[in-house]
Length: 232
Image (cartoon, rainbow, N blue to C red; front, top):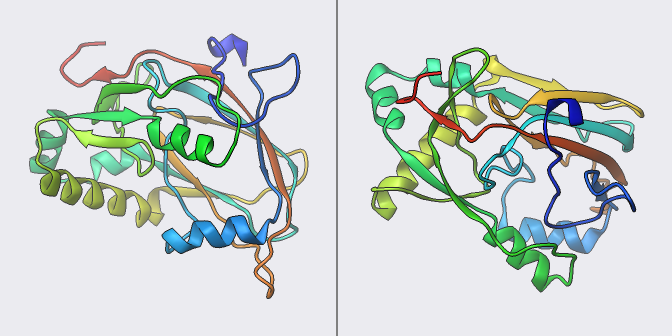
């Protein structure tokens, strides 16, 4: 992945000794952890772009599947350039002009409270809500449900309404989504600039236990997101 850019080092969770670019994603089937999550959420899905709070978020990302359930545990990807194209010209004009604050503070604070590993303090970065893809020239929605804390210039009720609309547009757009069903040693490389994705925890047994799901991630940092007002 170094061919595509400088490796991104995840600020929380485990990595491989001597290889800090490897981000280890492991869900051990812990019933209590899953119950705590669903106490606050009505679904296990969490749509996001990886590490969007960095000044230069990853461009290309590799996921490698090591171990997991025989059925379920898929990852769903949505095309954010197609999602943008499906919006009306009026909404396109609105979102073209907006910026959002992306932050890692919630993730960092949650990890610290849980006694987990934290490598650096929270990061807040302002990015355009619509970014230009440097290769295709397409406009891509750069919005997610995990890291955005504010849309610059909007009141709380306005940004809540807009974010909920955009996320529901992406989540329900099954005609511009792809679903990856994993098998051991599967590898997927995706463009983090023009997609949004979520894991699906649908491999829970009758006792509300889930099996182990074990992946690794490698991410190559890319350019600072390009606003639509800038030529490429």
